Image (cartoon, rainbow, N blue to C red):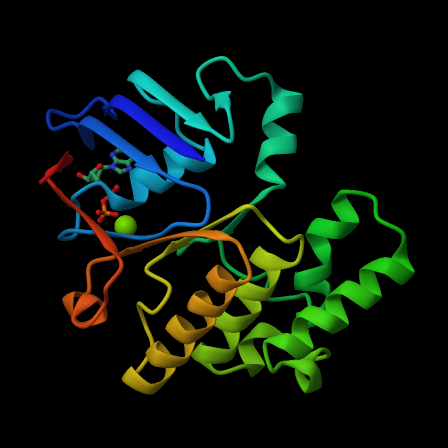
Length: 216
Ligand SMILES: Nc1ncnc2c1ncn2[C@@H]1O[C@H](COP(=O)(O)OP(=O)(O)O)[C@@H](O)[C@H]1O
Ligand SMILES: [Mg+2]
């Protein structure tokens, strides 16, 4: 599903964000990417989502070489990847329904189908009664569930989650992790980046640790 070969990423500063990163993630895997702040976790997810290109090395996602992909193929690939990124926030002036519907609207789906899918997804995430709410009216946990709803609305092949429990208390953290597990069980390949050791304490999942841009 995802293959990285000797990926190196530099933003021009003296220390590269990623150094010689090689990694294979199979279809249906659930993988944690961990390591301290600044280790390169977010950069790695951005390479997979193709918002950053490797400075050298290769990245293949769903059979596509991201160094050679054209804009149309990239748009198509991105539709199959759901993302919950820290810097990819909900739109504060759109309500929950609109935030979740947006991706489907951009893809040009007919409105009745959009309504049906949004209702279904919000119900699944326990947000059915929040459709008309605006993000500032929601708790942190609810906002994160809306972000997850938006990420999974189109049944993605891959879900990338960057510090998905970053600002949540322990109960809500458990709730979000349970949700990610369930999404994984339904067939999505899930990659979660987290600096939290607490989150990894009892997991039997694969853990990839980065330190200063290298896999350790
Ligand atoms: N857009 C950018 N421009 C310059 N440097 C960046 C950029 N994004 C990340 N970096 C640098 O790359 C390194 C890794 O960052 P990041 O991938 O965000 O780490 P993590 O998510 O593990 O905290 C850091 O030193 C960071 O400052
Ligand atoms: Mg990060």
